[in-house]
Length: 127
Length: 110
Image (cartoon, rainbow over all chains, first blue to last red; front, side):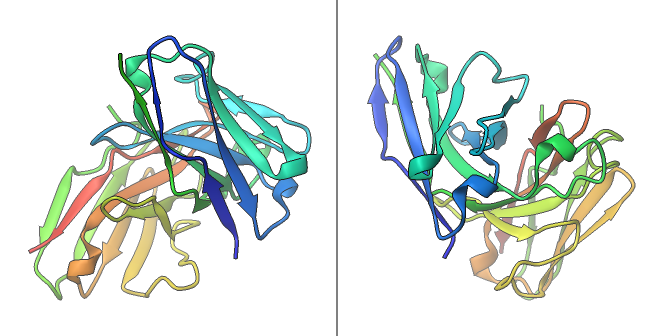
């Protein structure tokens, strides 16, 4: 079974750093782009960015560029999302999800969909 | 303000049919395929429809998707109380070079 298992909930103070993880299993991890989606409390889904495990090619949403860093360790089938200095507004649930196609070929007729999803990591930033 | 507006909520009685719309533009829905996700309370989203109208294994045929121009629609027939969830459309925006989602629609089965 294809699965994505995320790290546990985190409680941090403003200004602290954080790195959360997402481990893939049941498929060849390196062959699929894997990305992150934010869901703030009571709000909708926001696509943050995506990374290709083979060469670490990374794409960010303009809204999240410079705010977070996405990385990967293909040797342990794990993707990461990290912050260098958290803000209260970073409090949210974060999901990782496998992307269906290579976004580099999505200029048109893009067959992009997201499956599966991790269980989510709740990040709470509070003083 | 979501890139892909959806109605905030819809409701219908058990057994009835409901549709959820998703509006886009020429750079996203008008150019690329649409997917739909179901998020039951307290759980992660789950793929419901992909490539506009295809259902993953295990998704009942009560769920259907369609696309016309820069809009997409999710249809659910034979509503059940277990269908109460938030539903999101998603696609790729070729101008942003980024994924985009609708704002989500909360389905209530009365």
